[in-house]
Amino acid sequence: MSVLVAVVVLAMFCAGAMALAWWVAITSGRSGWADTFWSFTVGLAGVAAALWPLGELTARHWLVAVIVAVWSGRLGLHIARRTLSGGDDPRYAELKRGWGDNYRAQFLLFLEIQAAVALVLAVAVMAAANNPAPLGIGDALGVLIAIGAIFGESQADAQLSRFARNPANRGKVCDTGLWGWSRHPNYFFEFLYWAALVPIAIGHWWGLVALAAPLMMFVLLRYVSGVPPLEQHMLRSRGEAFAAYQQRVPPFFPRPPRR
Image 1 (cartoon, one colour):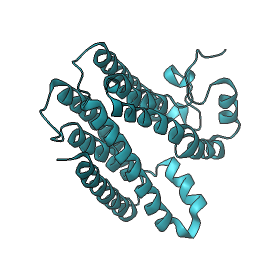
Image 2 (cartoon, one colour):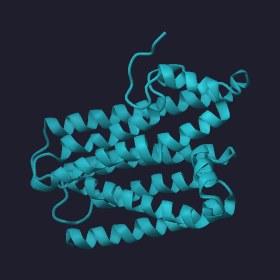
Image 3 (cartoon, one colour):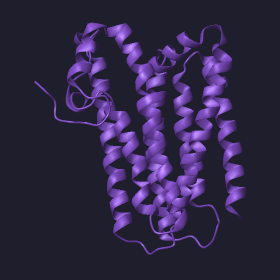
Image 4 (cartoon, one colour):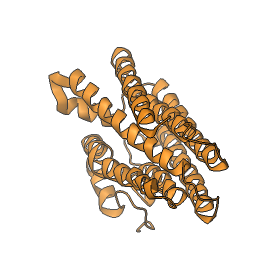
């Protein structure tokens, strides 16, 4: 089956899945389900893209499918557990405040844009999986980056969860561990994970499509739907404590903490 057919099928799947995510989030009153659905949607679309029958399946197809499945499963389950614990996602709460009475329609549009993002990521996965070159150093480097990114993101999530569970930290800003190196280490490692596709993909002409994944994720996380709404919420809820945190810790790319 052709690449065009694959893209059309994957687009329909992503759009339908995020429409369902919108319905679940609206009816449950828990916007965190949107990110849970997105994580699993990207994972399923990515695995399907990696194994799409464009030719004979190779070790690289299965390698890419596995690292996508591991990323998706960890992130999706983490967000699902967080959502089940209650409360609204602060990013979506901030967006909801800005959307006002038009919240439902704007939220649906926002999630369908996320469906388009999921499609781009799936196509990048397909490009990486279909590199015809033999397995080599690029694949090893990509796997190492992916493992490091998944581990780093899981550590950042665990550190923040432990901080939030401690009653003594109520009203404070988490600035320990990875959160002393970056204000959003989970976003940084998310970007890094998608950068892992690049060395795996380089080797054929449309492998350059894989570059779209980390570039797009960096722009979205750093400047659009990640850092800006979350930091607006944190400034509103933590005030001067978060403003001081902004002064001493970089927003995205990590660096050693300042005294």
